[in-house]
Length: 67
Image 1 (cartoon, helix red, strand yellow):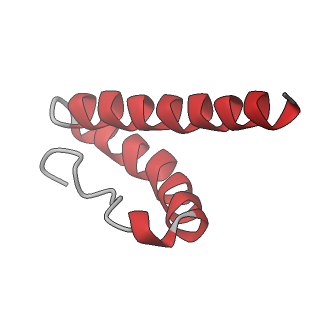
Image 2: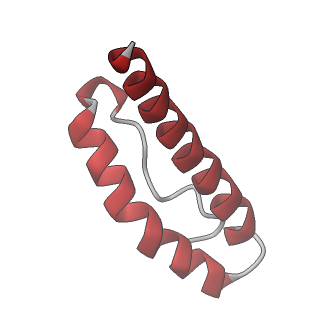
């Protein structure tokens, strides 16, 4: 049972990060300052996820509007 709860916690964290990146990329299309914040937050998270799941490499921070 402990493995299932740990796995669901990891899944919830990953989904939360993806949701945050989507929200930040939408906001990044509205404002350049928000776009800079988006990259500042997105870059370490994307690097972490890309190292954690090498198959899942297409996470990039260029989706923030006109950056």
